[in-house]
Length: 336
Figure (cartoon, rainbow, N blue to C red):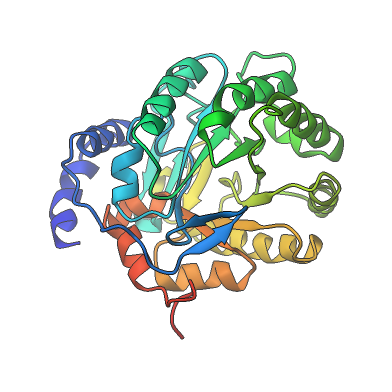
């Protein structure tokens, strides 16, 4: 932690995307200290065992460039993506903004990624090296200019399911026009069915990632769809387009999805509500504002089996996952 405190001013002196690219480069070249194996408090989900319940959320490693070093930081699961069928540059820069005083980040990246061909090559190379030290998830998105969503998710599923321990349907990013409208019961069913059909030769658990800014009717529809379609899980939640009134950082007015500490309470409240609406029958992954053992405990108390983070790494550094794992008791929960 002390080393990162020394380096953080240098990183924060760079434009956020440039700092992120530098971080990925350092990970790929072995310049980040490992956090250990993370083999504490193993958790079994979908018939597979993760060494711990702490995961990396999608968005950090969109193109599957640094899977091995990310596991070495101590994560029990690593989720890459979002991946679209065709490469796309995303929205114009600048598109990532640190809210330092609020410990948050606003992004309007827009599913920038290298596309399924490049990601498939890297995933295949990773799997050829042997068994992953944890669960590997692949987060799927649609191309901005695709007229229909379901075929795009199907393409991603067919190509990438053979390398994944689970797939995520991302219909909740605020940075692709009309994407969040796909969270309706009818649209979700179409996408889920298309995705399952596409990966019929290599079926893996299927999860949907939802937004935190849902109306009550939307929450209820998603819960019904999750139960009707026997989803393997829900990730709660993606970034928020709302802006809490207590934000103090000048960047708060930027357009995009807000993550980090300001998202912690609303995402945890939604987690608890979706646990109630799904009657505890659907595995839930809690994400949003996780940066301490207390945050992990709050997510688990609200119904999460697994807990993911991303923005916490920006402010607390690469040692965060190992510290969170070390804070877990043997049964996977923070000690009382």
